[in-house]
Amino acid sequence: MNLSSRSERLTGRIFLIALVVVTLLPFLSMLSAALQPRGTVPTGLAWPTDPQWGNFADAFTAANMGALLKSSLLIVAGVVPIGVLIATMAGFGLGHLRVPGGHIAFGLLLLGLTLPFEAVVTPMYYQMRDMGLLNTRWAIILPLIGLYMPFAVFWMRAHFTNVPPELSEAARVDGSNTWQLFWRVHVPLARPAIASLTILLFLWTWNQFLLAIVMVDDATKRTMAGALGAFQGQWGTDLVLLCAGSLLILTPTLIVFLIFQRQFIKALLQGSVKG
Amino acid sequence: MTSALGSAPAGSGIASRPGGGNPGPPVRPHRKRRWGRTARWIGWVWVLPALIMYAVFVLRPLALTVQYSLYRWNGIGSARWVGFENYLTVFTDRDLLKIISNAFVLIVFFSFIPVALGLLVASLVRRITTGPGGTLVRTVLFLPQVIPLVAAGIAWSWVLSSSGLVNQALRAVGLDGLTRSWLGEFNTALPAVGVIGTWVMLGLCTILLVTGMSKIDPSLYEAARMDGAGPIREFFAVTLPSLRQEIGVCLTVTVIAALASFDIVYISTSGGPGIQTTVPGLEIYRLAFSQRQVGLASALGVVLMLLVLVCVLPIQRLTRGEKA
Image (cartoon, rainbow over all chains, first blue to last red; front, top):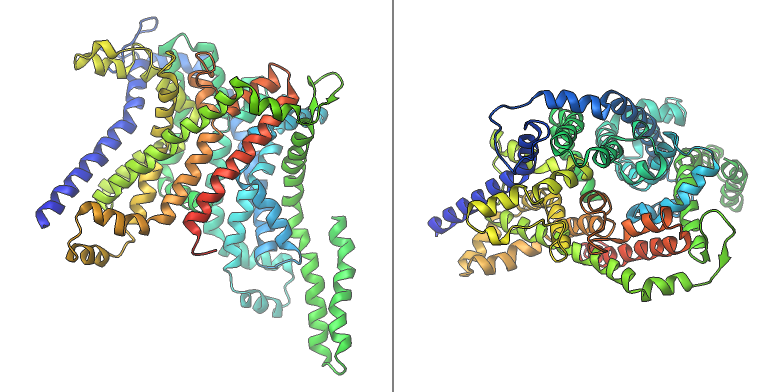
């Protein structure tokens, strides 16, 4: 019996390793293509005899990486702090202050939790056109904040409902008002929830594609994912450069992921469980 | 803003009523309660910024989508009321029905295969080893979740192309006859797009399920073995029921991703060949922004939204039934 379970585990390990290999193969295949000499037709996975690391420099210029990074950072800077702040406030109001009629607001927000972006993108486009914001980063920033609210408020409310009310009463006796209470007592306590939310909103914004291609024509004013789409459109026939550029565009995300991987994995796991 | 200010007096009015009905309440609690009520209404100020952003950028467009769906409009000229004609088109047009059914085919690849494979690995591994090995496995399996779907699309377009890795591997084992341009051929394009989705979702599902697995009480397995249950009985009697919630989470996330897919298809096939891989999300984009059929695009958007709800709500009910 012990023996059979041991061989089972071994099979499991093999499956797991196979999974890891399959996950990595597309990246390796891209890397091998990116290192071939320009103008050749690469094959799936072959280590080049003379790796052309210079392709990455070419792709850096071709993709206009500097401008892309700046644009993505600006969009993230517009979406994430405001999104996290107003979601935390709303979570506090709904979960802790328990405003009268709050369940109606919450119900409305729940409606948006499974809403596909495609279902609202058409009127959103005309709304942005009427506001004169098309082809500006605001046309990505403002809708994204709104679209993230269902999940973000849901997330923060879940945290604040678990905070014991006595905590606020104790602080009120000290004479602090709600605003002070929020900043001095509740925000510091909510730090883990806020950190996870920040990571998720950052990732979703950075990787947002649909809004980027609908709202903004100029690739250098888009998110990273939107810019990558444009890069593929422009260099789709030059496979070597396309692979080099794609890997390059991925690098910032990968670096941030590897640095904060524990927090990322925690946030993604919790995020999918609660969402 | 106005609603919070306007409601505040009403709130305090209600609060004073129970106090008034009670002939001799001690002054202090009465005051405190009244203050508390008003404060609770003022609490709306905390909720409003989020609610306003949500109303302006989600609820309003949503209402407009429903409104547009009842008109024929090219986005520029004047719109003409057509009632439910657009919906009739969605449900009778052969191409549109094919496009909707494509989304359901993708569910097999985005949801069923990752969950089935994830369950298999989970029931065999039980827990991912702690320590550096486990961290490495976790990190790698999460990569597809972290990179943009656009990147996954580009990488796999290359892997599945005629000179790509898949064909190279087939040639290496002598199956030259099977090689093809997987995303370009009529019969293989949709499954090939599906495989990209499987790759994206597999790691997340596996880790969620293995994490759930490690929380199951080992004595349940011992009990099952005592009763003479084999690995298969054990799986259905212990593993599957204990992982109900995790399976529900995986299915919810992946089914939404399949039905609302856009990025992967846009990048890898643009919906082709023909409409072989076109999904509702892509068709909405095309109808609204290149064919200028805003009404029909909106009707398809409403249908897509409802389809997601119809598929996700039963999953939620099945897997969270006990709690609700």
